[in-house]
Length: 281
Ligand SMILES: [Zn+2]
Ligand SMILES: [Zn+2]
Image 1 (spheres, rainbow, N blue to C red):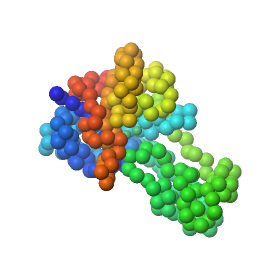
Image 2: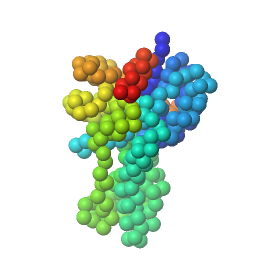
Image 3: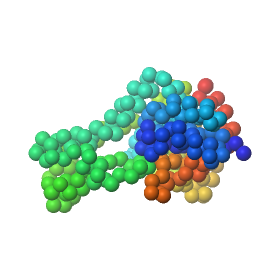
Image 4: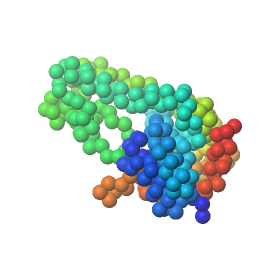
């Protein structure tokens, strides 16, 4: 059995374990290969590749790019991207700035209005746990304002400061679309896969993405039901596209594993040959 877990996060993004630890855990789980797919960064890949040589585990260089489509956050996995590609690295930096810039803009406007709020207050109000992909945003800032005593209720926070047109309103910065992420990945020599298509509450989207440049679907994911897994596998196969899978491991804290342990979802490591060949087109 040569199994591969093609979706794991590390301390390079919001995971709890170092890249080398993920590789060790893959070894302990009896896997042949593991992909490192941090949010909008490839910073964890080099350490994992080193550890892969020590443990005899194949490490797939990867990335998980955040995009938006019709108001939904859609994640796109890129495999075998060239992690030294300067254009890709520059694009990923711009992605990480988008992630942080709106909240920081709102916080600094509130500071200008005399409210001593910081991003640390916002993160604390969000009670942020690792593995939560959802973005920190205005509801958390509203909670922080209540905790600071700047307003009595979150409704008041919106009415006075955060709603569109109010004193601390900052428009959301534009995010790239899924087809743009497919192109970024292809231009960096990689293969583009739609991450966890079952989590978007609109199964029809997956087919649209397959028709607009995605090379395949992540049918197997820790948060997918068995019925969703076969639905997306069949959909990808019907379009002659690739099928991948992974745990989306983010780490464990106080006995709670976020999404699933390494090896919770795997695919036959033979798919690596296809992913690499696709990437090399
Ligand atoms: Zn994701
Ligand atoms: Zn993920």
